[in-house]
Image (cartoon, rainbow, N blue to C red):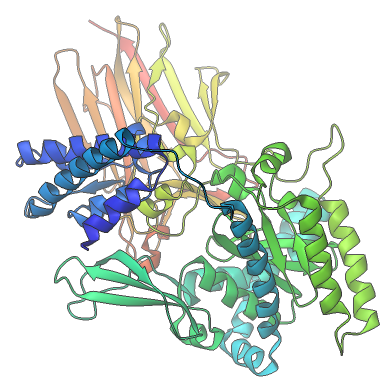
Length: 630
């Protein structure tokens, strides 16, 4: 069976409506490419296109079909190179057509049949409980003293502690300046600075994310093909990826063995969370592994000072943002289970503000049965030989504090972080994240143009990155309009640009998606008064670049006679003013392209609007002066 046939069969396993819609779009795409082989527009699939988001990404096997016929990922879209052979495109069209005929034939001759007595839900329930049981047993391996010593020896503890001292001094200066010595939030930050340093080091320096391994034969890029089971107990499964250049099949073992992972230092969220949890335990943190049934893992660390568990996601370098998955990634959560050396705990309610919807999706097992099962496992662990009574009493008190924290907030008092903005997932390629539905709505681009009101001669747009708001100001400085959300004021954005909040360093900025060669943001301004024209244009902006990265600015001016001018502002030094080049224009576009950088962290080396989360200053100021048209 060919890979293409396998993916079409996988496509057929979707719900009928999802399959039909995806099949139709894929068939049209194949036909357009075959009928118009030289036209580039038919070889480009934008991942933000509503049709792709609503009909292709939800269908298992659809994206795989596109990759198999030769599509490759480029920034925010898929592209079929002109030199790619069309033989597989023909094959896909034939398979989709044959599958449709076969389905119609099966439906026309379908007869009533006796259904098996074993229900699918009961089997799934057993698998779910087995998963909990196995993870609870497996988490004890983090307590191996030899393994902890090896893990601890890898951590550059002295360097991290130096970073803690520097950050601590900065925080203390802020506390002194703001006069808020009693601020509990600041106390909590100080208490967990080392954890924040560890999280940052782990993400930026230690562990590597792998979508597909490079080809060992030619070092070319690979793409996922299929998965096989492994007989090696140290390996969960083996993914087979195929080189897009030479066709070599490359194995990517998904290791569960912690000693091996300390050496390979690569993988996806499962490997990341397990090793980060181990490192936390090796440094004396009371840490536990958290498993989300909708396919993600992370870590929680107990804070004795705060009396609560702190969420820490090493894949995202995000700390204490438990609502990120529901509000930022858009995940439809069901069961989130935490595993420590002491206990199993259902922690779903820490990660949702929509308990009613979550309850409707929790259909694998009754709540009573799940509670009973977890209690049984905890009793077995805490009454085992060698488990002290003092430890058991400590865990009981800790449980009580946790249960109180997860109770719904009383009327008028919202939980922390409820009203904060959350970006979508940043780890993994854009295609992979979109296919999982873990990208925020900001990825779906909304074109917006700022309209300069009639009779207004001085127009100012200010953007405040810390507050994530735009202000339009008139000549007297009064606020004429306000828009919340950086993407809500953009005409165009490409390359998966997102708003990055670094809680440990207390800074915020815009960056492009990891894996994207560049990221672009563009603003549009249009004069509404037909009697006025633009006389001058200027802007000031805050940026930071590292390791050879750069931000390219371009200004485009359009005139009544359909003429246009394009100005490349490479050396604008974050401040620019022009008169003659835009004089008489009725519309202008200002764009910033984030590019360059070094190695896997290049996406983070061009930072637009970087500033402190406490800053009251604007990150961008655009001033447009208008005059009467003569």
